[in-house]
Image (cartoon, rainbow, N blue to C red; front, side, top):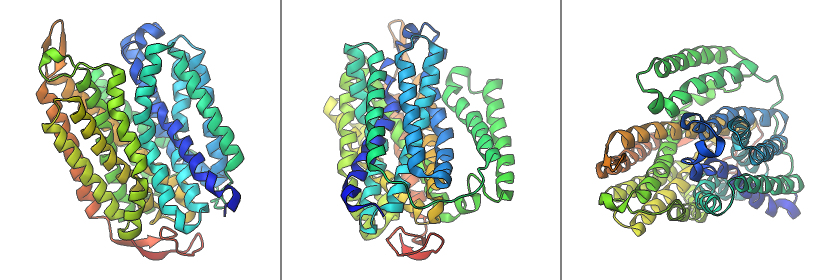
Length: 479
């Protein structure tokens, strides 16, 4: 267990680190339209500055979780922060697209810090503090992105774009030093051989799946490249799954992942990730649409970011509430409550989008639901997997959310680029397009609520409710 004198510092340090890591997802959003000029490249190539980070995060997160289970979660967290700082410095020193892409990949590779941190909290904190600590740590996934957008927009608007990356490097270095001083190594290990085939197969399958999802609108959804990559992902995952089932120490334990609790939680995570990213894509465009359209609000990127910032604050403030719901009714009910709140937020947005305060309210309600939902998912996962597999299991769960965000990017892009009307020399999304995106978000959240309802009420729980068990022993617990 963590010594009493440092115990109180562990959660704030990990939470700060989680926010820093999640900042990387929205760090360059204010620069999207100016990246081609800044990096002296084409628009299609510049778009990889965003896509590369998402792909790196999806690939590395489950791998980092497994390596953390094998070689130490603290060690992997520090290595991940080293990658973040290195990537940020590379970007800050660069003015061309190739090194910036390398730096952004390194930044994305640090995303595994959040599920690793959740696993350390589960491994080491006293059982009475685990639920609230996991809620806070889970909330950082959305907090960093929501709070980071206005800060990044303000910085990019008033200073050189390189300042964004120097700031990221500085924050990453502060977090790394704090972690090195405060964070103990988890006492829970799962020694064994690393599944290299599993890692490579997962990486190839994810790239084949996520690349056409994120680039399909640009390449054409029926183009040979898009369809070929989708077909390749199906084949690769089929072969990968067959081999993983025969591997003694797989990267992803598919048998455990197929248990009703883990499987349904991961499905709900995909849908919740979709719902989270849908608002991040839709709201800024609505706020920045010209007033002359009759429904646009004509705001700057900074104002658009500020309208979304309260959502991040609410996510963090509601983490104790989420923990209390989990403690009283179990994480299954918490997930259902969160997805119900998300659904309500999107339905409000479909009918109330004519004023800035309305959009801010909608974003805040959706953010509240995301915060509650995200806090429940690790608790559900960890209630159903052995103690020594928590890093890999949480990494896989984070991956499912990343898949959901990629689907959201694809679907919302299709809607907002196909339901348009002429506005001067350009095309802008119609009012019906924004209503449609809100209704799709509500549908995804409602489907997540339905999936959560079917998660078993009672599952084997190694330590989720604080039972005094060894790593390999399971006891029933109400969830």
